[in-house]
Image (cartoon, rainbow, N blue to C red):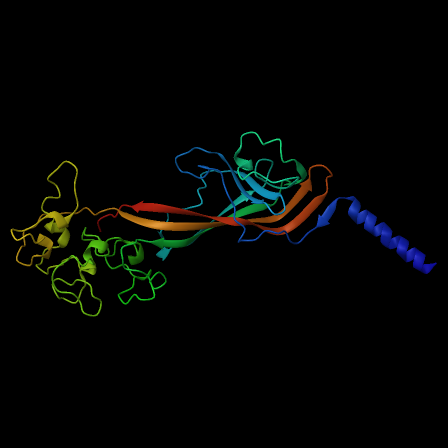
Length: 332
């Protein structure tokens, strides 16, 4: 008799807990390695797309998950480089879930077209067999981090150097010319308007530093790409750009001003003619960003049965975007 009473009590508790439709689930089959996709131009800065879908389609299980949200300027990137004296490596955006900002999980009865979420009218096939959507409440965090950034000037960081590289490195802590751009992100490390890539070229005649194999025209121990007076004639390299202002459109290029022997003035120690050039070439930086999408304290409800799934945290996946940022250098 006692056993029957206990069994009846357990059955009653189970029915009460299950009857309200709340099922607590701690895991979903998604993580930071899950590839999220988005529709063409959805995150483009030149298109005024207001609503974005970040989605994953699993062809093996015919299931998908999608996060629909109001874009509000989100691009998966950011322009900031230096903030409070430190390199900006990440940024976070938090979005409140609502009727318009929501996550939807679906199971289909067949293969899902790769452009399913990019069609203005969903196709009639495959059919959705189960659908769960988030209720109001909870948040989604977009964690944006820089996974790669470089000026591609030929001087690598230690992390980007090839195994057989024996030259100098660039460090994020260094800013040789004091222009606010750390050397690994600065195409012109000495701000002389001759790019670093040009100043380390094998085509520059003259003395080469034996330890690095790089040009040091005036043999002063400062490699050309770090020296703002490459020939040590007392005139800044950028001021030996004598034809910079010859045309309406200013051309900043000291390499196209030559003496009678065909040597650029900025590499001729016997030439000290100068003009004042207080402008600098713009700088381009190649960057790759990774955005990881994380939902917190969410409840998904089955559209047919009302069954609910509660999750304290769910990583939907991630995606990458590569960009080229142009930075205008301002005179000190």
